[in-house]
Image (tube, rainbow, N blue to C red; front, side, top):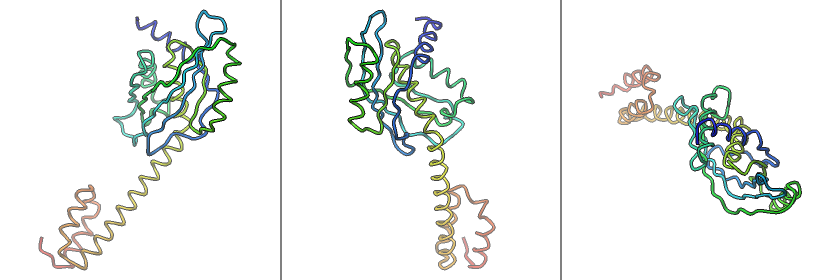
Length: 231
């Protein structure tokens, strides 16, 4: 398949994918998230023939923002059109908050069947079935039968965009908490070393291992001088 044809196919799929019911829970910040999807598609060139696909879509936990991870996306086994869509997203990373921490997609197909009925009727039945399960991580969408994998890609794009603000706040809060914990540990290590000069070398190692030697250097040498410690 030539590049222009693939590009047409993925944009056709993107433009014709609609999220009918979104998960009520956002994507996890510190763990993987499994979304249970229900994709309803009309078959091409067939009247009242509707395919329903059910499966799991796994989004791996977002990584802390780094320049290297900006725009990196691994679409796993979602196909060539989905990969091309990912490449387009990567090229426009500055316009999409989703790409600030990248993600990996893995799909697992569980069930697929074709129904002879109008798509609205099929969609109503799927909605009723999903509502009865009361699953906070279920998603119903309509899309195209080929390439249907791009529909899943767009689903995850929307879910990550909706979750991004909360995820980033969680990551920032975790980072602040870790920094505070480290600062508390260092203060305790200074106190311990002031009471026991045998711990001064261990304090020096802690500062160097955490890249904080220059920040605490004056305080450290003041402690050494006060203790009369010989390194």
